[in-house]
Structures are given as C-alpha cells and as structure tokens.
Figure 1 (cartoon, rainbow, N blue to C red):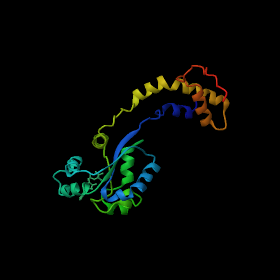
Figure 2: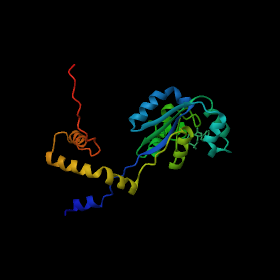
Figure 3: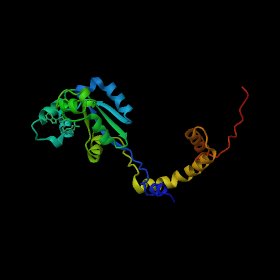
Figure 4: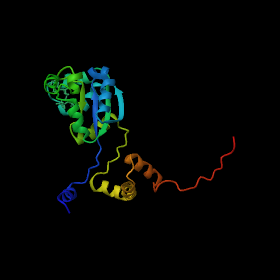
Length: 217
Ligand SMILES: Nc1ncnc2c1ncn2[C@@H]1O[C@H](COP(=O)(O)OP(=O)(O)OP(=O)(O)O)[C@@H](O)[C@H]1O
C-alpha cells in the first residue's frame, strides 16, 4: 500500500449535512428584495419558504426578546414593525455561518469599511436599520424558522451514523454496482452515463411490463 492510499483510508468520510437558517429582509431593504433573493440563490442557498409579513410591535418584541431591557430595544421594535418584512427559510451546507458572513457586521459603517461586498454594506442604512437578519446559532435558527413558519413540518435530517445507515441500506448497494460498471465503460460523460444507469437499474422501479397495446389513431 502506498503512502497516498494510507492517507485516503485515514480521511474522514464526506459529511452529508444540510442546515437551515432564518433570514429576514428588514423594512428598509424590502425594496431591494428581488436583488437580494438573486444573491441568495447565487450563493448556493435554497429558499425553502418565504413570507412577506407586517409584524405587530408585540410580535417584533417576542422575536427580539433577547434584547429586552437594552437601550435600543424600543426603537428596534418600532423599526421592525414599521413596515412589511420578508422572512425566508434558507438551506445549504453550513447555512447559519454562511448567511451571517454574507450579511456582514451589525453596524453598516463597519460593514462598509471591512466587508464592502456584504449585504449590510450594500443595502443597510445604519446600526439599527441594517437591512438583514440572520440566525446566530442552530437553536435560534430552529426557533426562528418556527416563529415565521409555524406550520412547517421540520423533518430531522439524518446525520452521522443515522445517515450512514440510511445510505448503506438504500443507496450504496446500487450505487456501487453502477460505479463498478462506470469504471469498466469509462464513458465520455461519466455523470450522465451514471445517471442513466441508475434510472435503468433503480431497484425501486416498477417491474410491471407495459401491456397496453396502442390503438391506431
Ligand atoms: N447599538 C445598537 N443601536 C441600535 N440598534 C441596534 C444596536 N445593536 C443592535 N441593534 C439592532 O438590533 C438587532 C439585533 O442585534 P444583534 O446584536 O443581535 O445583532 P445581529 O446579530 O448582527 O443582528 P440580527 O439579530 O438582526 O441578525 C441588530 O440587527 C440591529 O438592528
């Protein structure tokens, strides 16, 4: 066995993990919503759900309850309930940290200086009217997505051993056969060839023969 082979064996298996986060386009940035959604999609996010809502002051207070008691809390609540916002449930790998990176620092002045390409630098106005929100942790993402999308059924995503068991049971046996055939054939476009092979050899494909006889027109 070569050193390269040993290094491959020591490598962790690839992780399959799709994370969700809550994004809000705040009242001052709603006029730029189309542009912002394009940037979201071009940054590898999937928009799972979207709602345009006008929060009441009570709802805005509940959403930002962690800031209750701070000097800026009353004006934050007034601002967040001053006009419609767009709430988006976003998904991608490492969605929470990627979205916060794309959004940029809380202060728009700082965002313009240090992260001029961030969404807050582009669409925010000041420390408070900073255009966008993003969940800051896995726990708050779950809570915030439910806050805006209470009816959404959140399917737990299989991770770790559960993901490995699922793939080992449902996908790997067929995929391995396909990959073996692929290595024998070495087609020009291996991905398309494999996709066709998988469709043709899908063990879940109905096996009933098509017995209908086409009537002449
Ligand atoms: N010093 C401040 N003065 C006025 N408004 C503020 C101040 N600090 C924060 N805010 C407002 O409160 C929001 C929540 O503050 P937080 O410290 O959680 O920032 P953040 O995590 O960057 O923002 P968000 O939670 O909206 O994504 C900010 O986005 C901003 O609108």
